[in-house]
Length: 489
Image (cartoon, rainbow, N blue to C red; front, side):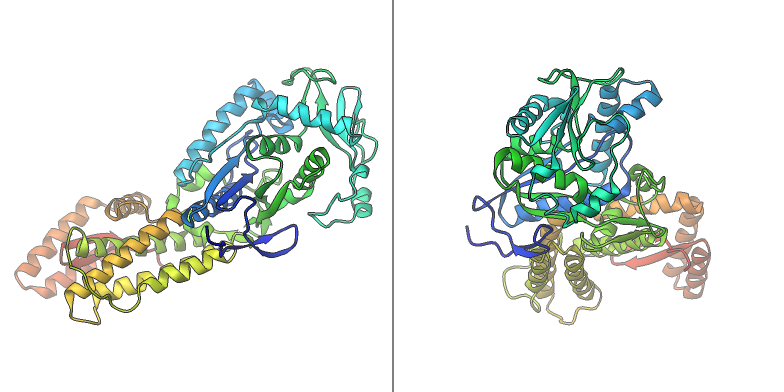
């Protein structure tokens, strides 16, 4: 396989590096998945959408990708939520695993190759902890097992934090038996009402960080290519993963570390702990799933993104423009043979620009810019063709339409039938705005009759009445259609 042209930002080195997989032509990716104690919020959804596109693009570029995203189904937060609802922790976690799958499927995320759970990886977790104890990196204390941070000379190499500063901000909490404030739990002794498993240190359950070390090694090996997650996982979660994995194996855990920026809500980082969250399923009840994806991808994955209702309205308006363009193109070229021959201009330049943007650290904002330029040309060729050669225009539109399909395969948008998408969009807007569809249809019939009688003054009068109802009409070669007008600014 030819050398990859992809460059990605590595948090470990804090610079862009060429993607050079450990095995040529293959990329192994691990992304920290959800802790399933509640419904995911749109901040989580942005992270998972970003890595969904990363994996899609790697496959588009011809790589064989193994994608692992875990479920944390054993955790303090799950136990607390289960106590509040009266459920067993494992049952509550399983319920929210299924809710997560429903939500991300609605957002057009593809299922990872492997979706392991902590509860199914206990033997591997225990084995790593035992190795760390045997090597002197971990110690047992009355059924708990802790990683001793002082034994790891490279600790904090990912986050670049100063250990003295970290120590000043940490305290040993009541009930903890660790030697130093930065030491972290690998295994927690069993407590009443908590799930537990047998271990050499007695019954208990894993700490948070050890799970990803065990699951990534089980499915991807001791060293793999890309480890990803949200920005707030750099410390302590990913830092602790590196410490325990590399201390246990003596090998580099991951070659590249990728982190997705925060989603802000009214100027504050979205966080369940802060109580300022918008659940994904609530957002999808108000905005089209592809429009929400478009909103996520409109900003580079490493940059902060501000969530606001106006931003979602703008994203949905852009999606409507794109789908209206695709409907016009499909009506013009679907099922037609324009023969072989030259194309107008250089349609392939848009795909080149798209790939160039995606090669540059998966820059979806730049990729959408290339896509917008392509749609501009598609509209020009359908509405006001600059050339009179109809077969030439038809061939060019067909080539552009096929390129949209290629880009859609990467971005996860524009994959629906244009007519079906536009109808759903219209139906939801009708409900939200309280528009009387029967009255709209009556006025459209009245306008059609006026146009047939060449009473254009009456036709214009009816158009004005429809506009007053909040309806825009479009006259096309295929007939007259209508949509709900965009809200006034």
